[in-house]
Length: 137
Image (cartoon, rainbow, N blue to C red; front, side, top):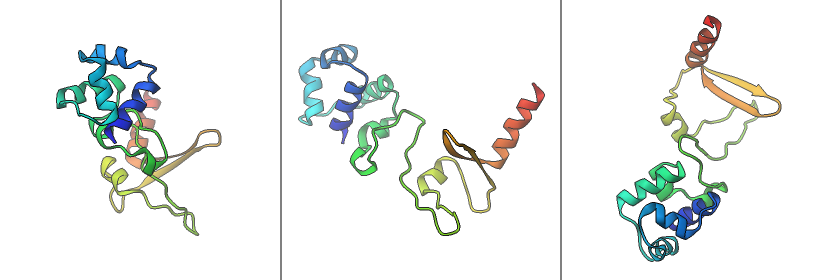
């Protein structure tokens, strides 16, 4: 997955192998070997690559775009997968999302909607805190 992610991110950022290799202080041939899977960079180069492309190190190394059907997301953005809406409109929030956003059983969530952009879910406390900030201004 690393080699596919590296190649995708380089092309997405409109960088040639030569340009990216220069930023990493490696040869174009070395970068080419990373993209073909012939070799792997050391951890410092991986961290630098993640920083250059603004993705997490974990996503750079292990993101599987074939499984998700979507390209690697920027750092702090997540694709949690597909959920199915039940008969009564219920959805199950994926485990990874619950862990990242510390959502636990019994928490109150607010569902917001914009007909042009879609639906957003936010914890009640964070929403109320945000609203209080707006009211103070």
